Amino acid sequence: MKLAFSTLGVPGLPISDVVWLAASHGYHGVELRAHPEEPVHTGLGITERADVVAEFKAGGVEILAVAGYARVAEPGEDTPVLAELRALAELARDLGAPFVRVFPGGGTEQSAEEADATAARRLGLAAEHAADLGVRILLETHDSHRTGAAATRVLGQVGHRNTGALWDVMHTWLGGEQPSVSYAALSPYLGYVQVKDIASAEDTTPLALGAGVLPLTECVEVLSREGWDGWLCWEYEARWYPDAAPLPEQLAAGRRHLDRLLCESA
Image 1 (cartoon, helix red, strand yellow):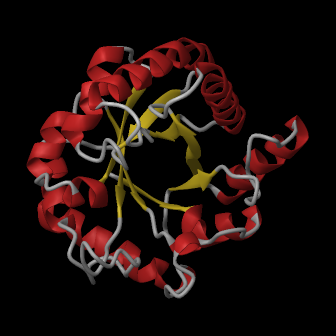
Image 2 (cartoon, helix red, strand yellow):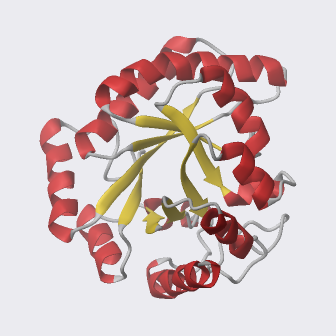
């Protein structure tokens, strides 16, 4: 499996520094948070996008994904959501990233069935454009669809190879789903896996990998046992927890912990 980390852990850090951190600590790739407060977002011009690509190429680091904030199940008109999906997919294409991350965001104003149908309709429409660009849109297990079972209710309706799932192990755990059950549901659609660690269900402040309660060992064991050979991406949510320990000083230990899990599960 290849290892990456998300720039959510180093908010606002210049791309040159992100690439250096990844290369110097042995990470194969980076998930880029796409937001106007970050160096990479959908408002970048062609020249700026090319500069980002050049930085990563020079460092020998891959761009795993563009982590966007489109909410495909949220109530409202389709047009603005589809425009956001299109912009994210075009950004991913220009950066050479294979994946775009999106959220469900179904909220409480509609039934689960309505949220599923809304998300499936929008993803189905966006998938055709994504296919033309060579990009895959991944629905993260998150918020209104935090379990593998919930996410696949949507993806099963879409039925397009340019849509898929992003397994956030924290959210499936918070949803009460065992890793083996999550994998069984998500495996036909799985793009990559986000790993992290937290103190408890009540305290989701990010911790060093292995220092919390999330079933990382079980997740990696399931993936290895099933022969899955994709990406593990450490999403350390420092952006939302300003008192969390800085990510850069933990990258070496995090890499060692992931390597240990992979070796033990081999």
